[in-house]
Length: 492
Image (cartoon, rainbow, N blue to C red; front, side):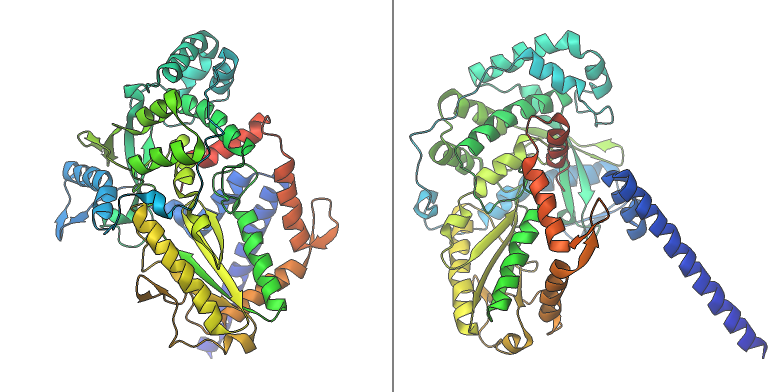
């Protein structure tokens, strides 16, 4: 009798606790929505997911099956791994020809040429005034607050240095030196490969990079040189636009009675594996960067130096032989230039890229035709990766099928989607997940939600309206542009 009463009271208490928690977080989310504060929203989400509770301290590291716990050895091991990982992966690739142009499918553009414009004192002063004082201090130990306060005084001198650099084609050596912080991603915390190297560069160098970024991106945009399939790190593009592009296509294919196949391709250590010689050659031949501008970018990416900072301990300096610095302003844009010609090698599929995250999809009425389309272009991608000294991550590369129940029954596992002679595993093990996913897209697009004015509208229209607002923003809008640059800086 007492046990029955206890159980009833316990269940009631647990139910009330769940309701209280639900109401608390619902109210918090509504407060964030009313305040239109994405930063607080993500802070709340991370708190719910327990991400804020993770410690940045690295107590142990496994190097060649040996566990090390000494902070100095951990810092040195991380720095050695980050410096050599790109070159190590490149050496594992068998390349039949050193001439990557045989597989780039992008014509040279001798009719256009990128030229630096002189940087004005006003531009530099504006960048200094807009500095966030919370920005991490680089290896030169000059804080953002000091630069912001002294903006009017130091901007003429910095302008002179910046213009001297672009006129001579020489990047300041001290600005190539960076702290590198290993940021944990996932899986085993004792393995170096499960950490991402984030470069903390001198703040002055990032101001200079922003000004060069503005000029280079304007040039690329005016001449429509960037692939239309690339949504990463580009103003007026986002994960939202990439999602709408894919979902719209799958939704249409499903309505037409076709089966869609999607391959999610993961490139191993993409930013760390960029070959400098190939990057510079592409910039010259495909994007019209030559003469003193070519010399400047060559100076920018070469002879970079980094020290790894772990648990308050600093490693010895090491030179980088490949890769672009994660955490820089120009690094992500240079990466886009590197992989810009990848979509040109696809003949039977449609690509959708967000930085190094690459998806290709195709549709067909019969399964064999669909597999032929995917395998044909996966073979082209394999050749492109080899020519550009990159590798795919086989365990993270997946395939997913989207369609009706009737079409999903056409899937024949004896005819797999292949990459480098190996079958690509399914993204989801449950056979009916693809139906659920397609129906979810259909439901999301048709569901009625309240817009900012409280009026009922479809979710799809809401997404498209949000994209439209992105396109309507002017690049001169400093606040909007600063937000985009923040995305570049926080590359994660």
